[in-house]
Length: 419
Image (cartoon, rainbow, N blue to C red; front, side, top):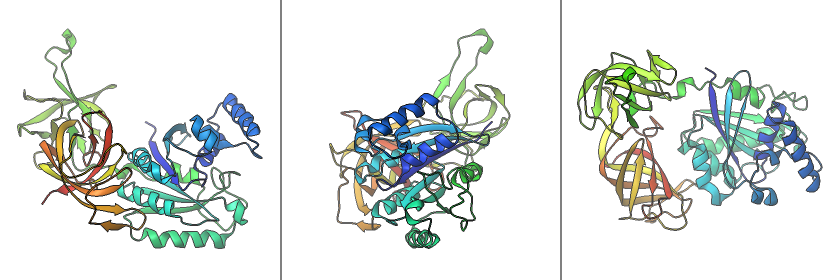
């Protein structure tokens, strides 16, 4: 099975994110001839000197007219080594929520920086969000090197400036690559204009970065999404508990416990779309059968008796507020969706709002508004089964929903149980 790498691109406005993705699609020959011709025609109409590869990803008419990315654009391409899913996220401050959405499932983030401008406020903002979302790998792509005469000195200056800021963040794997997305330097092929750079070009790094160990393979977690009871003779008495494994490894014969009931059993079989398997792990979609008849329904969780998640109704989390129509404030009631479990919750307290440009904690703020991030205490109507977000991104995250409009208004990363 070909490995899939999900990566997000971020950076300040006009740093060249869309151009970089267009260049990758073009140089890996994953765009059709008619798409390229359409982009060439549009580039001519806009009076561009070069074919504007950014138009390959800027699909909204408003984006093309303004020359900026507004929504999260997803693109797919593959090489003989890997398949890739790209989330091209917006650079503007008012679209922070879009970046949180686009980067939430990423294995790697590429933050672009204009070699002429250096590290801007938006660059720091996006690096912080990447670390907050615990994206395991971060690439700082110093773009537009052609406009600084491919200067090693300028690249080193930007690199040192960013390193100084990154020390305060929780980033485990940081790579710096000098590129020119417009001309293709160090994007797919090594650049002859920068012989002083001895590292890999960007695509080679994306193809070879090790992501297999990023997932939690220790804590076995299966949030039950659906109970399968096929009405056919071939599957007489079949009762399968279907869902996507959110952590750990499961095998037939393993002892398991079901939450919230606490009943224990053993795994009898694990089935997938392609047939039964002897081993299953995140993020496989499976149907598990047990040796005992236990009353299990959607929202329950199957895990190991000696390795269980935290079970509580009181949660501390970092929340990104995603709507301008209302505020997150104490005593506000919302619906919460965590793994396959749905409940209602009340905001007990907003402990502080985080200034994501300076990392300063504003403890006087009692509300969160659009695009703001803060530490929040919640009380849920039923217990949640979670691990801290830093340990497991799947069982440590949730979304908040406005019950009147059914809109998603917040995204949260669980820090732990309220003390």
